[in-house]
Image (cartoon, rainbow, N blue to C red; front, top):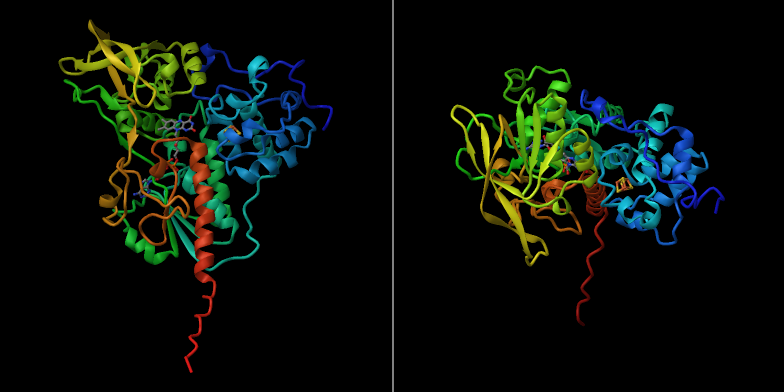
Length: 484
Ligand SMILES: Cc1cc2nc3c(=O)[nH]c(=O)nc-3n(C[C@H](O)[C@H](O)[C@H](O)COP(=O)(O)OP(=O)(O)OC[C@H]3O[C@@H](n4cnc5c(N)ncnc54)[C@H](O)[C@@H]3O)c2cc1C
Ligand code: SF4
């Protein structure tokens, strides 16, 4: 082992420089700078090179983290990049937006006592360097295959699958109902977490790799699933989950109350230089408003931080559980607090007040009771604890469910689970329709980018296996020997 490693005792954990909150509040740029070369090497050298690397086990892609940290510490960056890219199609994206505190870094052995190696930041550094140096090149398959694959959805699951299939030489076409490639990477996740050009350079690379992209094309409206099945040897559904959960409470229809994704999409489109009527009219612009966001997940965190940047008068996040029990990343909560967001924990909305538009969220305080069968403490309302929270814009970030895909795609035989996600055979990743596979959020329910990438890669492998088996000559039928 190189002497350079195991420096965690003498070298404290250091993240790349974070811009001051007062500056961040004024723009939509990413909040962390990149590591300088020496800093990245120094931080990578903190790795203890464990025999059983828990970081790798808990990374959904099982990235070979200790090895690329070692190569980074030794200054062998191109090799580090090759290794990182071997298991992850978008290391610079995961390095930016994975909730590392719950995945790789949360399971780093030196976390207890010395604080984790900053794995995500090193992964981002390695890959951003690879882009700068021209080491990230379009795919040139060793041989072209005749079979074509249709992929529905240009989010991370569809894109990862497209890349993997193209590497094997398949002819790949991606269909998406949006007008841009990226799915939630482009229209959900704000710029301050993931700058758009990071996604767009991936799109360019795919196109240069001769992956065809058909945008503004909704399967079920502009083309049917049956047509796609006729056009391609296999189809992959990677359509994500988009039905926003709602709240059944008096006043919920008042103007000034909007679904979180509508708000974030408007902000992202505006940032991309588009004219967005709902933003220009002020309906989905937080400027000068008292904003209340309902929910405690990643989407809620993105809404509160976007509202701050749009110049809201005040921004509050209402969540019915406490900080320890929220689904969003603790790091994001910390960033949001630094930027001036107020968290109103243990508080649930009961209704919305207002004459022409919303003016207050009528809320009640919550007490967390005994854990239920799932182990989570059940929220219970505290009697006579009502409060009215002032609001001109309320954003509902209450989660997402799948759309009714069998109906949308006129494919009643497409089997779904009780949650409406697509039912697949996990071994083959095939749906109930022959030759139709599925991956990403539409299978798992709302999840993470890193899981979408993992599923996309797995689906590509299964599609390849299925097509190869189909093409193989059938074993000769056993010959019946006639009795004498
Ligand atoms: C606001 C927000 C913030 C998030 N932040 C994070 C984060 O910080 N870190 C993280 O890891 N995860 C985050 N996530 C979750 C992450 O974005 C998703 O888990 C991931 O994008 C799922 O990938 P996917 O490819 O399955 O689906 P998507 O990214 O949703 O892509 C699906 C694509 O399918 C297209 N599509 C749908 N139906 C059709 C159709 N019928 N025809 C044609 N095209 C269709 C859609 O237009 C879309 O482009 C966030 C999610 C949201 C909403
Ligand atoms: S992909 Fe995500 S979980 Fe895996 S090493 Fe990178 S940041 Fe960690």
